[in-house]
Image 1 (cartoon, rainbow, N blue to C red):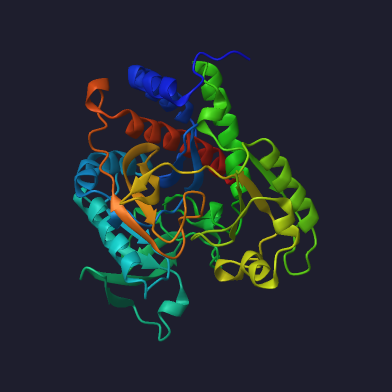
Image 2 (cartoon, rainbow, N blue to C red):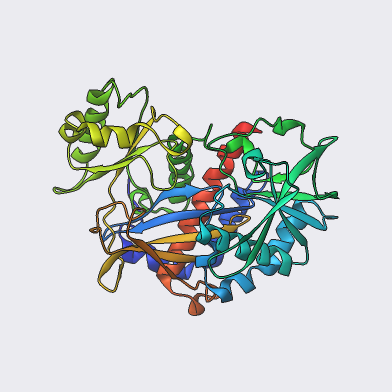
Amino acid sequence: MEFKINNKDQLEQFVCENWDKINAYIAQLQIGLPVPFYSSVDIRESREKYAPVDHNMYPAGFNNLCSVDIRNATSLVRDTLKKINSEARNVGIIPESHTKNLMYLDHLATLAKLITDAGYRTSFVSFDSALFPDNEDFIDLVSASGSPIKIVRGQIQNGAIFALGEKMDVAINNNDQSNPWPIEWREITTPIAPTPLIGWFRRQKNTHFSYYKKVADEFANHFEINPDLIQAQFRAVEDVDFETKHGLEKLGNAVDEVISNLKPGSKVFVKASQGTYGMGISVVSSGEEIINMNRKTRNKMDVGKNKIKFTSLLVQEGVETIIKYDNNPAEITVYLIDGKSMGGFMRINAEKDSLANLNSRGMVFRKLCMSDLVSTVEDHKSKDAIYSIIARLATVAAAYEIKEVL
């Protein structure tokens, strides 16, 4: 098939010249879909392409965003919460149970400030009984930057979520449910966004990237863009057991199949389909490396957060990042509210090379202010615009995932 846009330079120029038209197209895609309240998208830029390589439905890391972007997102948060419940006053944030992770607490403090500045009373509400061993009403914590964090023991009364006797009008879920709580979420009447039904106990990266391919291919076809410019190749492999080695040959064959379509010297990421926090990832250059994987590496690939056993794998093209910070490899993470880009950061890892998994030990973050992404072409940089478009398309794919479970 012939395309009008066949390389990165043409893509960047096209996006700059058609910024409003492209965003209107994506806004049209979102109509009728359950777009997540927020999300974050990891994006790699190589010499040949831009590609999303991960999507987080319950993002942490708001503390790594530019303060200007946080301030500018206030009205977006307000508008999004009004769509969920136009009469809402009390908003509960359902956090992870990382009470010893002081940087995560900084993230919670930033997220709460964003919602509070939008005009809502904000509380942290948890249903994790382990946080309240003596049936306390709340626990008081302090984040890395000194912000006070009070996590209240949540209660459910007649289907509604309460905290210290206050009824929550909306709950913002920041718990990935990799270890699901024994709650019948469908019986909860309080709106919860994003839905806990799409947590990692169920969600699969394989499903997400299948939807992303559909969205990206249709977008590319509409604008006559070579779809390879905006996505990484991948294969889904099921029924693998790293402990017993069952399915490793099948997984190795999928690795070789993807590599055969790439330029010499390429690598692929083998990712647990339910992996989070950068867990369950190996970077390999041949299927043989999978088949001959040693026990230590197999153990790393076998079980993830909260002892989820990895049996479904995503074999994904290794997109070699050309982004550098202080001469160290970096990648971009874009944050979105209601499917609209509102900020981001660079993930940098001095201990890794440009083909490695940067979401691992040694990573640091640098703020990436996207507040100059405004409505006119002259006022934003082409690369920032591309990151925004890729992230928005990925979040449309996430909305299809949510639609599956509702």
